[in-house]
Image 1 (cartoon, rainbow, N blue to C red):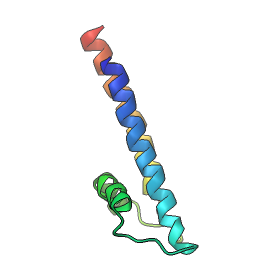
Image 2: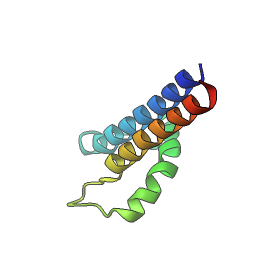
Image 3: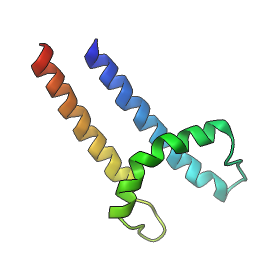
Image 4: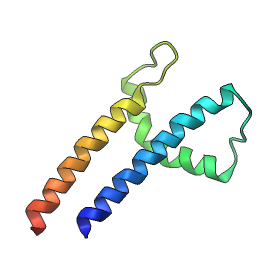
Length: 90
């Protein structure tokens, strides 16, 4: 049960980051309201996760690579947490 909750939590974070990536490209094609509740929710949830990586990795040619590094760190964290759960409960 705990295993499933951890998986879902990491999946939700991953999808929110993907949504943020997509939202960052939308203004190129159309106008979006940055104060829309859904957009603000995605930005407020993902910004604390992405900000430290953005400080470490400067944009390359205007492209923000911090989500890629964040995906790698999240997968590492997911594996670590699942192994800890397995060691403690199984």
